[in-house]
Amino acid sequence: MKQNILKAMETGELQAFYQPQYDAISGKIVSAEALVRWITSDNKIIPPDKFIPDAETKGYVTEIDWYMTEQVCQMLATQKQNHEKQFPIAINFSRYHIQESDFTEKLCAIADKYAIPHALLEVEITESAMVNEEAKILNWLNSVRNAGFTIAIDDFGSGLSSLQFVKDMPADILKIDKSLLSHNCENEKERVVLESIFYFANRLHMITIAEGVETKEQLQFLRTCDCKKIQGYLFAKPMSKSDYLAICKNSQSVENTEDILNMQTPASAMNLLMRVLFQKYPLVIFSNLTRNSYYMMAYEDFTATSCPSTGIFEELIIHGASSMHPDDQQIFAQTFNRKNLLKAYANGESKIRLITRQLGDDGQYRPVETTDYFIKTSSSDDVLVITLCENLPLEN
Ligand code: C2E
Ligand code: MG
Ligand code: MG
Image 1 (spheres, protein in one colour):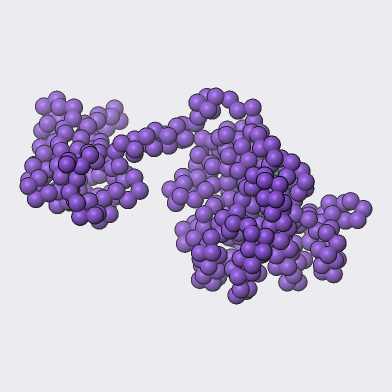
Image 2: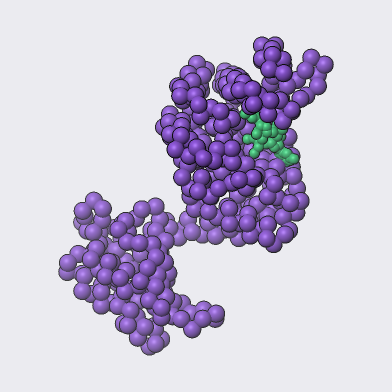
C-alpha cells in the first residue's frame, strides 16, 4: 500500500478535498477543512479511513500530511493569483508529527514558499490520540502557535476526550465531534452535555465548530448553544479543489437567511445584550446582601485585577474602597456598607448611586459612577443587588 500511496502523490491521484465551514448565524463560508482523497485511475474515490490507518502503522502518514499542506498552499496561492477571497484552511496532522523536531520550520518553509500568511493555516490535531504525551505536545503546539498558525482540537467528545487537555493546550479552535449529535438533538441529557461543552469553550475564548451537522434541527439547537461554525453535509460535503474554488468565488450564504432577529437564539441574544452592557459598564457585580456574597463580571481586565471574581461582599467593599482616592474612601465604604444597603432596601429605596475617584492601572484617578440596583426575585427571600460601574470622562 505504501508504494501505491507514494506513487499516487507523484501522479496527483492523491488529492486534497475541501469541506467548507460556515458561520452558524449568517450561513456564510468562513473557512474549510482539507481532507485527503485517493482518486484512482479508474476514477474511484478512496476515503482516508481506507489508507490512513495503514499509513499510521507503517509511519508514512507524516508524508501524506506534508503533501496535503503543499496542496493547500498551492490552492491558496491560486486564489491569491486570481484576486479571489481566501479563507483559512484546516489541515489534519497525525500525532506522529510530535517526533518531528523541525515541524514548525517545515510548516513555515512550505507556507513561505507560496507566500501564504500563516494565519490562513490551521493545524488540526486529535486530542484523544495524544494522551500521556502532554509535555511534548505543549512544546510542539506552542512553537506552532508562536509562528502565527492556528491550532484546532479535532473530534472533541469522541473516545478519550479530556477536559484537562483542552484546558492546558494553547488551542484556538474546538471541534465538537459528530458522535455527540443525534438526529434531532432532542435528548435532554445530550442537550445538557452539548450546552456545557459550548459554554466552557466560549468561556475559554475558543472558536467552536460542530462537525457532521446533517439536519436543520441540529443546526437550530447548535445556534441556541452559541456554536460559532458549522461543518457538515447539511451545508456542503467535502469537494474537489475546482468545486471549492467555485464556491469561494461567489461566497453567498448557504441559507436563504431570514431576519437575523427571527433566528436570534436566547444564548446569542444574551451575548449581544452583554456586549452592549459592557460598552457602557465595564464592571457588573451581582451580590446577595443577605448571604454576604458576590459574583463579578468584568469586561476584559478592567481595573479589578487584584480582586477575585467571587467572594464575600464585605471584603469586596473593603477592596473597592482601597482603590479609591483617599478623600473618597470613607464615603464609599459607608455608602456600600452591607448593613447600610439592607436598611436602604427596607426603607423602599430602589437604587443607590455614588461618584468617586478610582485609581486606574496607569496610576491616574478617574471618576467612576457606581450604582446599586436592588432586585427581588420570586424564588428567594434574599436581597439581591446588581452593581453597574461606569467610567466617567476625565475632568479637565
Ligand atoms: P476528521 O478530521 O474528523 O474529518 C471529518 C470527517 O467527517 C470527514 O471524513 C468528513 O467527510 C466527515 N463529515 C463531514 N461532515 C459530515 C456529515 O455531515 N456527516 C457525516 N457522517 N460525516 C461528515 P473523511 O474525509 O472520511 O475523513 C475521516 C478522517 O480521516 C478525518 O476525520 C481525519 O481524522 C482523517 N483524515 C482525513 N484527511 C487527513 C489527512 O490529510 N491527514 C491525516 N492525518 N488524517 C486525515
Ligand atoms: Mg479534522
Ligand atoms: Mg473530526
